[in-house]
Amino acid sequence: MLNAKVHELLNDQINKELYSAYLYLEFSNFFSAKGLNGFANWYMIQAQEERDHAMLFYTYLQNSGAKVTLDAIARPESDFKDGMEVLKAGLKHEEYVTSLINGIYAAADKAKDFRTMQFLNWFVKEQGEEETNANELISKMELFGGDPKSLYLLNQELSARVYSAPSLVL
Ligand code: FEO
Image: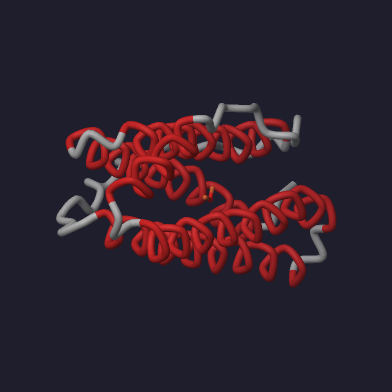
């Protein structure tokens, strides 16, 4: 049986990951409206990955015999003045998600819930990758975003991203 606090945090994380998917769908929407379909593709795939993350928490709770309680998903932030602001909001959001994962990990550690800690190891690594990706996008935009030809090529590069299912299977 899961510790009550660990259960609560794992359940909350379903909502946080679905919000992440919703936020990235809004980012994709922002870039589509600007005609930057490569950026839109990148965030559409990001949204799919976040939905996968939500399903991993959902499945983990169900496999643990723990009740899943679904909550309303908040309206995503959408008031961005330019693409750079979107990319920076993406990094800020990933840093927030990392802090949430760390918080669940700490609660599981306190409860000596080694199974949940092992489950979360994948997310700890994933968050490192997500933050790296978000930082790299910002660097590329800083370097190339100001020049139309370079922006065109960066957009092309991002259009090549393809979806792949998470490596963690429950
Ligand atoms: Fe599921 Fe990007 O954190």
